[in-house]
Image (cartoon, rainbow over all chains, first blue to last red; front, side, top):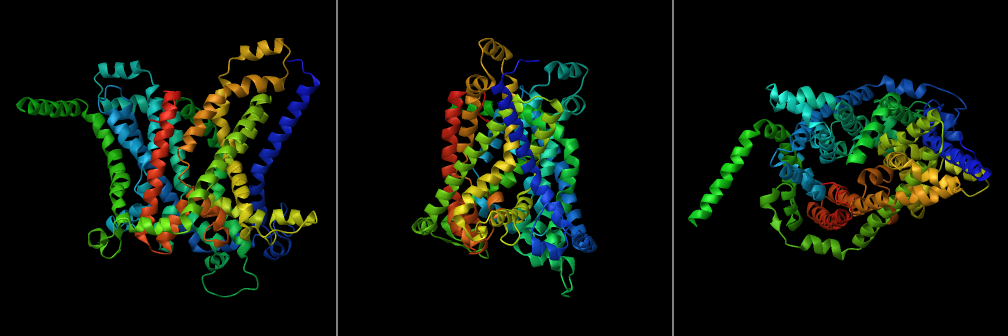
Length: 293
Length: 315
């Protein structure tokens, strides 16, 4: 299509090389992780981490999937993600739609109330005291959900998107006698489905990846989310072995190193498997948020 | 005075009329406002702890008021210049690394053809953004571990001395910035690619007629047009330079005190004062110091952004 001279071809060659290299580096840790999770523990200790397992073994998976704790953590993370995202979307879309309506006189005041929380916060101590001493949410699943329900950034992104919906759509429904709720449920939300799914996915990823709240507020092992299990086994490889067999029986080799790799694989599994289907939404939604944000 | 009261009553009436007219819309904002009130505004009252010798059993009302003693304690110690410096220094490194790598990758993606290849590479380089820091920390073990880590295996294969990274603080600013680029450069390309898609193609056409090659077009057309968006991104990031990335630093470094000299940031320090020392008062005082400095910076940068571009500030 274009006439190219030598320097252009060289430049293009370099570009292809660099982007391929970077993409490969992005995937390398995932491959390393999967490979070491199916490596026999002894050869992992002897040969270290590598791209190809010298002696494949599914021992680590057998052990972690044979214990109850991984299933419990999975259930905790799933509940937190599903319930959290559902509440988040209800609350976020409600307030975002209201302040996107230009006839709402105090929309500016409400936006400012939200914006102020980005500027200033009470700090970790006050947050900790509130949840533990006053709301007594510690060691309940709500401590993992409620503090993450509303993100002002996402409210603003969604508000900006709602504002791009043509006014005439809502106007004609109002003439037919629809009130604000009907307009929101029947017109604005269906039209804004791409934006809604982007924000929903962001909330979901946020809940899925969250571990700080568990670190602060959860002491009951039954309520450990997946990410917290990962944090615990980073700190303490032995944690992996107590997790795989609660009785302190010391087997010849407890696959502690490969077990933490296998646990991680199990944790990121859903994100990596769903990613190819979801990334189109992410990219589209992000461009939208970026350009109009 | 009478008239004043009348106008006040009038204002109240107008407020209620507005609330009544748009009652459905205001009802929709209520759940959101309630969450913000409880989880964001109530903790702001807790700043009071910074002025107490806080005792968790005695609570807010029973603890002794000590004025600025918590602040004196923090600012007379040796830690505050270190954690403040680390926070700012690491954040500046992250901003530079992320923005430069995002621009470079976006230029490349913008230039290469092949829809299929482009979409695939773009998807791949954004993937790390969605992985939690806890998982990244596991990845890091496979690379940096002194027994069997990939980097040390490579060093040994090249005949070099293996490095025990987990006790070498000097290596960490570099390690952290590399991980940061790995994780968010791809995500950063999205906004630049959107900006590049908006460049008028005539510019390139006329440059081509004048005999410009690709490198010259990038140098004289694409990059200069990225200036204003870069300026905005840098400014917005600078506004948050006082807030350390707790999620990243704590997941990657944790309680490894060997690495504190180069990696301990204000946020991790606050967490430690709270969790290991149980010093609520001082942790709160440091948090307040950070919030105030952060607020001042955000207000300054946002003011500059507003002068520069009315559309661009967040609010």
